[in-house]
Image (cartoon, rainbow, N blue to C red; front, top):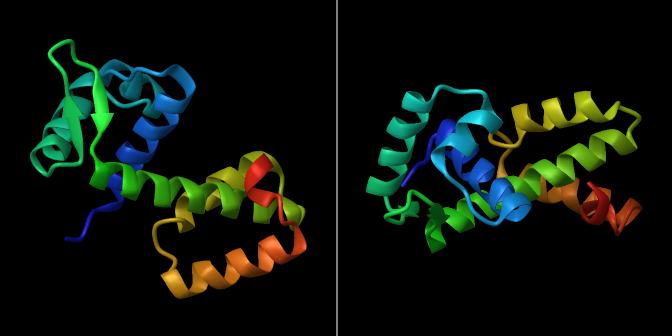
Length: 129
């Protein structure tokens, strides 16, 4: 099943917030992404219907195994690409912004080649990205 970039962004944001806060609610996602609460509610409903997230009766959101797999993959790409761009001399803010733009569109082959090259030059790149 093909997943859209926006869904990947939501799942990645849930993962980041979960790591940062422990618990995640729709309002946290809205604040983090600077989207309206109604927009987030619609997106969360779609993610829930597609089996990527679960929501408990108190409104806390968690990733399912498939949702976590997607989020983790995108977040790893983001961290590695951001770190790689920084290692090339790009400032941190621009590097993170550019990583967001390309993390979804790179083929697996190209990403793996960048990853191998980047980690060969800096084996701890993912540790501090």
